[in-house]
Image (tube, rainbow, N blue to C red; front, side, top):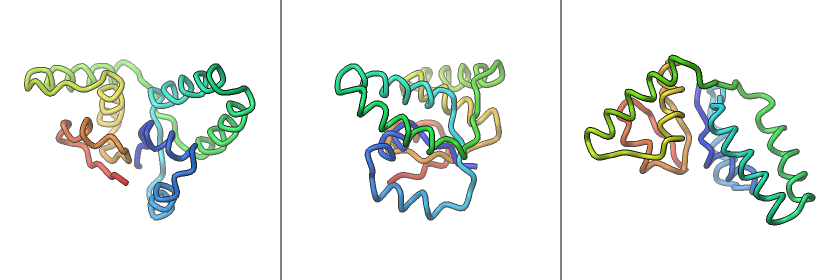
Length: 135
């Protein structure tokens, strides 16, 4: 399984052709964490408030279609525990990253998933056991 980061979802929604080609080349099943789902819904709500309800509806339709064939990976107790380990390890090295990225990594690693597609390589490369696919 490959996890799609929020950056992938955002770029997909705005029609990034390079990303769509990369996704078409993958043979693994795609998954998404509930943290990334939360982040995308924040962006959609902001779009509704700042741009228009019409644009929101358009993006929401694309978003729902995009995630309809993905596996959702939630944040539970074991994921929170793994995330806290990652946080402590990064903090001890002075390499802290955003909490949501730590949660995404914790969700992945506690469920035996180590591949992620992201545009945010700089953050995720600090977590040694992740395999990062960029575009």
